[in-house]
Length: 212
Image (tube, rainbow, N blue to C red; front, side, top):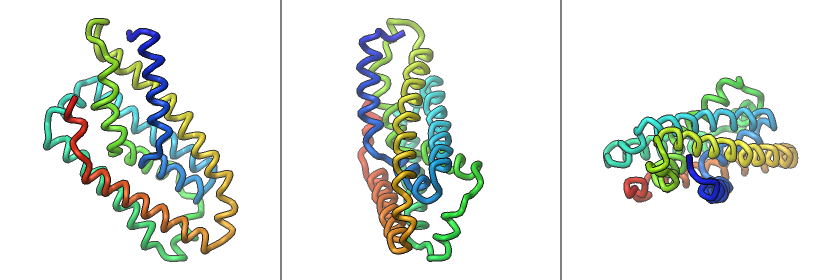
């Protein structure tokens, strides 16, 4: 297992990275504002169910395969970018009636599933497990897989705490926006533009993860 010093450094660096808004945070904030605290927390659960996929993939060596394969890494990156663009366009072209409908509660399974997909295809999370986490793994300390699982669980715990905070704060501030249809529409436009911007950034970013 990694030393306590290594775990402390990893925890601090991970928390700093998680606090920087990415696709997962945008999704959680959007859901929280549109549908309230419960929707935000369900979305957080879906997001970090997706994190489990990254942890398992890293532990089984799939992340190493992606890092070594330009084609595989590019496919994952563009799949994530395409999904973000889809979410953004759906927000931008939603009609007034559709917005009102979207504000109504939807099934928790749908919210959970969308959050899961967002994070499985999240370039920020993928790059974390490809480029950052391996720096804290030391083969000299024993099997690599258990070390990856431990570090991955720390990531998930910190992620649920930080993302849960985003969800609660967003839900608390949502009332003012929901009281105004104009403000709600502006929120959707802003959210759509952020999704599209993140999708474009993911599509045109360099292959940082393959430098591991």
